[in-house]
Image (cartoon, rainbow, N blue to C red):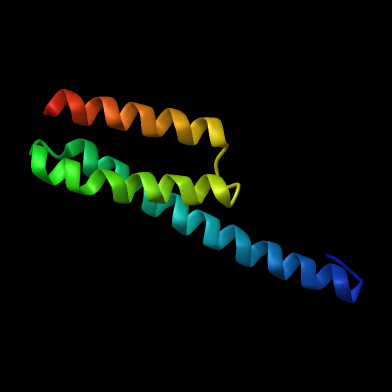
Length: 84
């Protein structure tokens, strides 16, 4: 365990960030899963911009790499176009 006051604070901050990142990451994964499970064109095209926005926010916060975000968005867009 850390001995310095600043290091203890850093440990607390890192734990808070880790929990927040896990929450947003899991929420986004669930949104992607729900989007892919949808077979209706209208619902899928309505959900797609929201999911893409969530992915962009994860990349902006460095939860996922920007290339991974772009790959996810590309795959999702292709799947939705295939449904339509």
